[in-house]
Image (tube, rainbow, N blue to C red; front, side):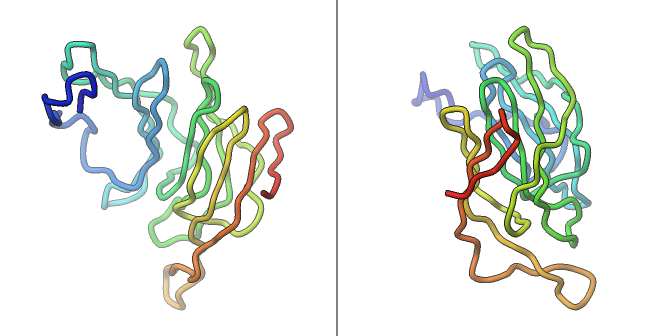
Length: 178
């Protein structure tokens, strides 16, 4: 949807994602475009990361491969702080446990792209489907869903859903409860 020309409506770009993928993290990066991080293809959870960017004329997006996550990841949350991309939570296996791990991809002011590095694990229960945001130099995590073993070979959602809130400070690599 081109917000400068809302009368134009939605445009579909066939194969922009390279195949079916859901439950990944997407963030709008100021220089890279829309960044797609991980996800579930229906055949498994992936670690792929790429950016999609269109030109001002609305041509089909160009796709730029970015460093893959260190682990496959879906059902996570992510946001931008400055130029850096952060993701946390989620799960690496569609039947596996939730994760408390977090990752940062450094993007230099000159456009250089680093590798994913781990940040301190999110305190509290590991979770899928958390809500993330970035504000005034802090990364925020709200809620999510904890998982527990289901007695067979998978995990099920724990009800009630989580209600906690956390702030991550990149300068100290520490989380503070809100």
